[in-house]
Length: 582
Image 1: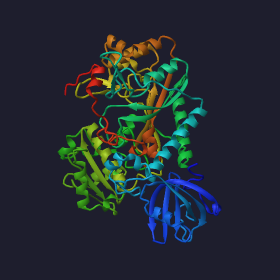
Image 2: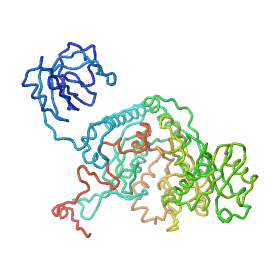
Image 3: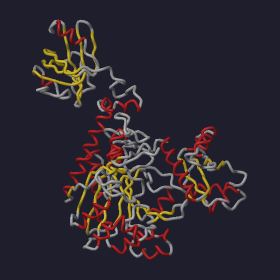
């Protein structure tokens, strides 16, 4: 038996108990006549004591040689600490060591195994097995496990059945590039790793498994950022014989359950907003509603003067920054430089101060009088002491730019409190999205999303106006889940594929198995998938997912710890009938 207790378990009630502990040496303090060693495992830290009056000389010498991260086992007696440490649960006691066994020596770690480490991100990812020993990462992984367990508890209690689906599948267009896997036994042919189990969960509905879920790995070969990984985890769910309202109610319940059980937070309101309104009021389809600063469209009150920048714009839109009138001219100039960065892309910014006495001072006073500026304040909801920030240009571009500015200002003003949770459903997305480069439409969600009832006829005449029976669940400005009511009949699916540019032969080659299944009694069905990595990060008070994944990839999609991806040798290439042309 390597241990009778963990390093986070011992309390005053254990005094005079004989114990066996095992773990890693966190640090040691050698006073010559007395040595203290902090022993760590994932449960906590226990202080060990070696005392020359009570410890044999040979063991004292052995203890002096213990280095950081040595793996040791000790046997000893729990005694009361003279100098108690109220900062740790075991701080009232220590263990007087009677036996010491070094189970494994350790090299000096390349960074300190402390909550606040001196290791940079790339270094910590290279030695991720050491990074996991640190409390922040360890606790994040434990937190993820708790969230996952609560997901399973809730869905199982609601009658969902967990079903596994294949990882080696057929490549289908899902919106991103597939990772492909060559087949040795089928020369010149490839599997693809699934971007989602979409078609399989629909086939499970055809099969009568009317409440399915799976916590599943998905794979997308796309450009990465802090909240993206080439492999990610979904809470994938599907239900048969349901309408949209049934699905929303179930997954509101799941979100409430997680917030209560994991965070101790009660959230009752899940407001709903149309996609068009989200774009008009917030400039994106995942609005953070923990704070205001809703967009005010100023065309009617700003395009009647001789200011050509506004007159020539498709949209003039502004936000009121609470307390922003305290910004100095230098701070405002920096804000203007911020929106002109390539990442945002605005050509400039007009501003207007709302003074405490009810007067206005703008950067375009030459063109607008006090009455004009008062109308700006009315439209944006600005109050005395606020600052109105105005952007103009093409509607779609300027909304994205002002949305970025809104989020940046909220961050600077401390309005994005990670302990406050504000969910919102965004509904009725466009079914199709126009690719401006090619002039072709593609599915905004995926090809199996159903149009809103009565709108399929518009596909022939006004495809851009067709709304999808689709919905996203947004939490604190992040999309945590999305889904739709699916197409469940062959004729409608064929129409949809036709409008996405598939010929009959292409549709048959890609999705013939699904079309065939629809002819054998497919029930009405729909579902939703949560992004588990992102959901866990937000519940954990963060927005980046990397530290909630045990072994993440970097921004180039590399695992720097195992050095992957990596070349394969010529024999493997020959066996797979592959030849490189680089």
